[in-house]
Length: 368
Image 1: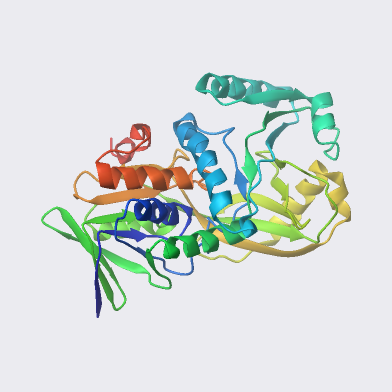
Image 2: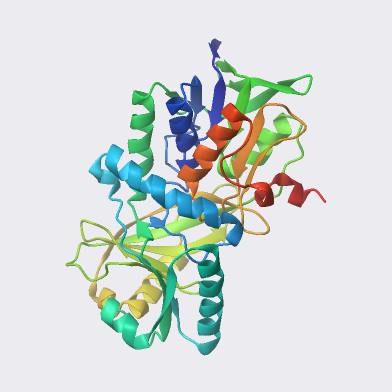
């Protein structure tokens, strides 16, 4: 049995866990990170790559707005392979009902301080001429962007290692160790990490770890995120685009199109891609961007996401176990806010309070 002593143990090598390690390292806190597979192998590395603020639950808005600032910092510190760009984000509307809903969301976002705006069909054609002319309108946020999820977590993991954080990959956490109401560390296969603070950021595996600590878990439903990748093409689409009933699309730096199909429930952690994704996402993408109908899909990927009943994460200190924190249930949209969540958790651990208001994202809302 390998025994390691540290100040903080972080469980999960996705964008949240790695960002937590990054900001703890900045503060000089000894930290060990445990990842059951390789860093970025699940939802953080198998998503559409959108770094967006608009069209969010307002409980997440402050995290998203701070998140894009940290993404700009990551773009300077991490290798260019992360491909972070502020290209803007378009949420599309095909009906008058959808237009009314977009306008209401824009009003709420503007009141919060986010500069999103409404585009009619003519304005949309001028901004993105290769979209289907049947699209009636869109909401647009120019400060939203995109990144390459396949490279973000591996690059961030290397940066975190350089900052002095030890990362144990292929080391699944089996139990959160607790004694007399205080967290004591984490047990894995052949490894025991002693720590005064533990952060559970392990996506759909979070409930079993909370149970191991004697904590009643909040509800999480595992889902699978699936994407298709086309052959490279000349530049056709600058912005990240999406529609809630269709799909989401972005064109990567190398010209490939990444086409995402919305997450679906999954049993027994079956990560196999489905023909439903290929047929529906491919068809929807060709409808939104007609020139895609002439392109070939060359591969796809999938990863697990973790969904709460209200589609918002739980980011909290567990009241019944001193030193235990949780950040999970990001419901398919944690890529943008992950860095801000990591910074807030680091502040909470070191200074006793997060740097952003997170009360509305607490575990208590599922305990009434």
